[in-house]
Image 1 (tube, one colour):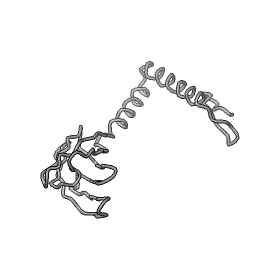
Image 2: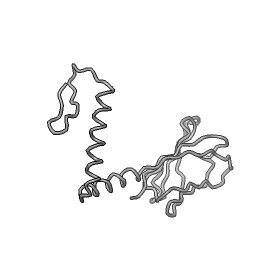
Image 3: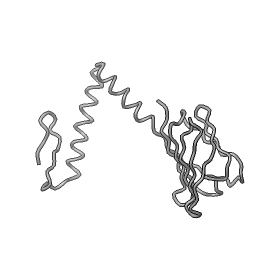
Image 4: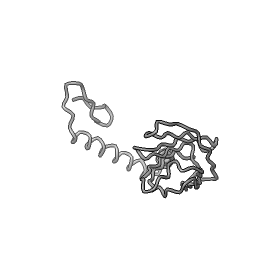
Length: 148
């Protein structure tokens, strides 16, 4: 196995056996280098930390259990405004949305149907009026890309 010139990180070739210890060792080297950079107080370290925090905080995931409210509104409260939203039960319903545009597409796996749903957004609150993605006792998974 070869290693990088500056930090001696693993560089595998097709004939090399990939080992967990090699990954763990590389991760430890990267972690130590980033910690040393952050401890140095340099502007570069601060910029790197800020960029990493912005990237990490732009993704959001959660779950909720549907109430079964027939044609009632369903409201999700997110940490910030969503650029993209996906809600899925993995086996019955899926909702894809661009909340800022007020657009959403609903898919029902069982009925093989697709339809549009109007949604409203105010800050981090997203609401739609439909029984879709609110079936009683069904766990829904939420994934969102949030504004910075």
